[in-house]
Length: 452
Image 1 (cartoon, rainbow, N blue to C red):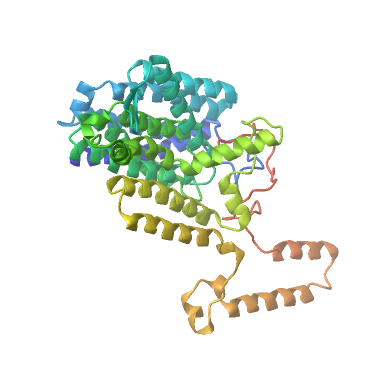
Image 2: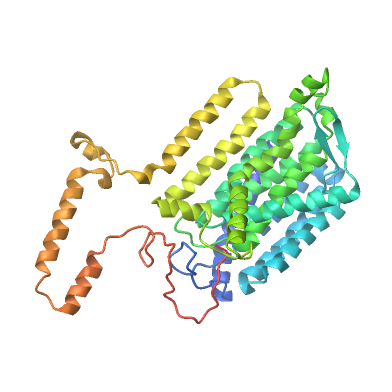
């Protein structure tokens, strides 16, 4: 565990320290496009944050290769080299897209090639556990197609959710933390060495996201871009493929007794395969809904719009930070709920806890539907927006300013109205506010576009 934590810390430190210079490089290189109507940030922000994340990953793998215990992962398995090869390819494609905005189909082809590179080097799904049957060995073509599908779906699910400051990095951090705990349990408790690569990938992925998050929280100073979102999606998929297709479920000693008991006992076997899917459940749902929505409208599935889940949260009335925290909450609930179920699938308190937390999440979603006011005795302990006296005073000040400005000239009256306009979420050009409407307020000197 100490070596895994050291690898995590080295990856996070390198990523954090490189993000600042990478931001300056992105500004000089012109990777800071104009804001589009579907974006939620207020002003052009440099991208290419994936450069720092990639070198952080390389540093983590390099350190792990020289540690006494983790070096055995590189000696006994070719999976770390397969991951590095596929990650380098997908990272280069992402960097080109952040700078020149390559076509979506070209990116899709690059994602498939990167997955194929990992398959050729041995990082592939070899078999699937099936209840009542046992181990089902896949043919070479079945293995290749399934591996490529998992990689492409995971990459695009993470890429689709990268729409708010800190959202993608935070959700993948939560995902990789849950996945690390499960993979480490398989490796340590069951003594299965084949789970060590997946555990290492999860630790490196946590370090990448943890080191980048301080620069990417709202208001973000730099975006990861496609070079970062596709990279962390590929690393997450690589861990899922490694622990699903390389570990023999018979080693867990779960297949015993009658067929009914076998079906029940093999539930934990499915967790390695289902956990990555539950981890990306929120972005995957967003991906499916986006494809259905765009196809229904007669648009291309790759056409950008403002119908993503994080856009909907802003439209409901949530602030930028609250929308991100709500997405964090649901991701953590699904990921760690699946993790808890894998540890003890028969505990009723786990199911009841998930149900209770789901109810809390629904309440959080509905918060903007009402504006509670605190009683007068508690007004000093709550934020100003919940104080009755502050709201009444603001209304009186607004009415007085309207009366005072009645005799001004038309020009002054227009300026006064502009100054009296309340600041609300969804208005562009306001410091700290989110914006989801049309707001092209910059010259056309730069090519429009953003990974967000």
